[in-house]
Image (cartoon, rainbow, N blue to C red; front, side):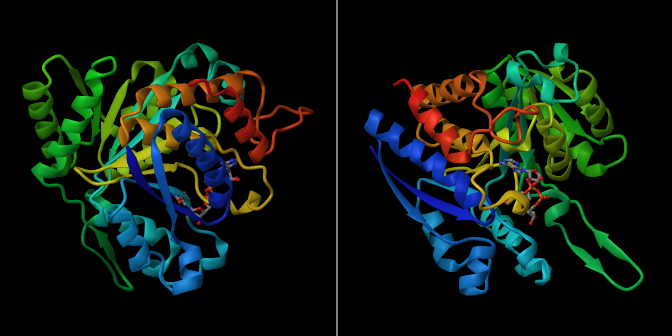
Length: 354
Ligand SMILES: NC(=O)c1ccc[n+]([C@@H]2O[C@H](COP(=O)([O-])OP(=O)(O)OC[C@H]3O[C@@H](n4cnc5c(N)ncnc54)[C@H](O)[C@@H]3O)[C@@H](O)[C@H]2O)c1
């Protein structure tokens, strides 16, 4: 099988972490006979420096023509004074919107050896495995907005088909897990949330009868993620609530650097990226944690290329390396020598068994 991957290293630590993950992808693909053609393009600040726009037409075209997209991170202080709609982060928003990547999947799981890094009690974290599914192309972030000197407004709009498609994906993914979905909204206040709740209920109850569905309000969800995270399996929610809750959930794992994500559409190339930003404070030092990027490749192998065995082998290799105490600077305790970004990548390569 031959596949094309558009790689978008972006800014800050993006190029460092994607380099390690791509080394691993190339090794795995050789082992499993997957013929991968990687084409690198510019996005974000790097694209602004070269072409004055955060998402050049050439980059978007390459993404549209590929089987999967792999991104590092965008943004940084260098571009903070540019107009909002031309900033690096806008390139990523435009890419997601152009490809109609309506569902953002963020798995959050815990490593037993890393529990001390979190502010949570250990009992709540053993074998934690939450999949946050955030609707990504509707809601408040894409509605009409305006600002004058005296007032400002943003509008939140959802259509039934927008909710149906993300609910259907959640239903499909839930059937491969513990068959439980917690849908999060603010239906006691918002009309969009009442439409969300009715539509999610209809899709899940009609099409996925074996899945248990519960609804909770977003304020309660924020509390339960801290007080009883082990009660969640698939957490399905709209765009802004998902943005906030998925960052909150990421802290259960111990470091922002550990978590991957996949943004999926219908019959479109998926976009795979670590959830962290460009981390300008540590960029260029070979100290960034590449796990989020490496596990984004794991998600690419699983979702875009249907290579479950290879994905499982990569997940296991990362777990083994972390359990063996090979930890980057964001994870080490006082006095322990951290592994560099490249050393961590080397250790994962040594641990892959296929
Ligand atoms: N998807 C994206 O590309 C994305 C996401 C979030 C933020 N951003 C952008 O990134 C820039 C910096 O934003 P920020 O500082 O708020 O968030 P950030 O995620 O870049 O960094 C937050 C903190 O976490 C640390 N960190 C992040 N990733 C790490 C890793 N892999 N290993 C070790 N430590 C890591 C950083 O050093 C920093 O202290 C901003 O321009 C922001 O807009 C981009």
